[in-house]
Image (cartoon, rainbow, N blue to C red; front, side, top):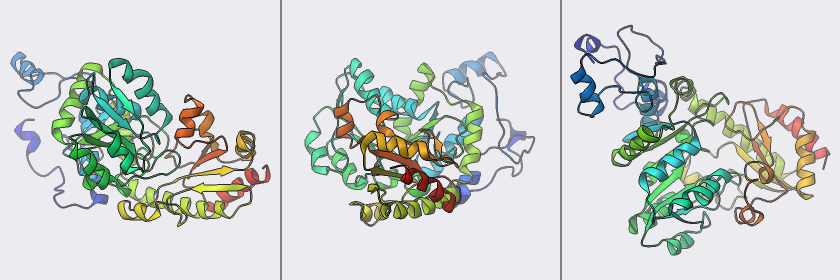
Length: 403
């Protein structure tokens, strides 16, 4: 960056700024054009002033852009904003949430290492570890998410990572993050938390003791179901390894998707507040409905981890799952009878979605794996959007009438 680019005050001083301010302004570095909105750098490569300048940048001797597979100004803005919101030293963006998990495992683990993955995770996460990473000599075991004694007993001398979703998909199960971090650190392992369901607006795992936090930014960070992306955040020493993996393997977030997600972050806090308020009302309402056997939502006083959720989260999220009487056939009838809610497996959208986890998001798991994860055939998952709650209840009543 040349001197004329740095003259005057084009950028904001954000020292001591609050979450909402960081969500709107963090990471932005304006060009000499003085643009108020974030610039979109749709370029694959960058020009250099001299051959020596190019060599120095490629060697990492001087800062600057090299190639958009791993350095891009728009993506950098998104990364720095996420880092600011999560309280991380550095964040690294990826093409999807699953590529974020892959990047963590491939950059921080080697053949012969042992990884503990909660059995209460997204179905594709289990498939990634079980079907693919095991091929490269990584050992994997699956403790119950909330069983701290089980985690402690499962750790081996070669355990490198503990990986959890908290809250989990789709049952809203939690783990005591500070306690699990202590267990990991006592044995020299790292704790990785998938914070997709809460986002940094509701939970900041790094401040609770976790070493690495990751997101499927496709969900609430975008917030409108438009693009795909992922992000990993933590200490610089770990993120350096993740950057190295991206530089070589290339599961890179596109500048356009990064720009869309930057704009999503600007409304993250207010959206999450609205999502949570509607989800709590729907969960309480579902608990009172005939035909609904059980509701899974940590905001309910009946949830066994309600107090833990209050302690480590600023809200309870927007995913409400419930079991209906009658197994898969009844669950499908319920879903098919709705007329407004979108039948799709994505979540984090302004539009409410409904899905049958046993045959979609967790459909590739074996029956035993689904049972271990608590995914029954009668389970229905709602991801509450931003519609009128009365309209949502009216649509869900059509599903209830079909039971």
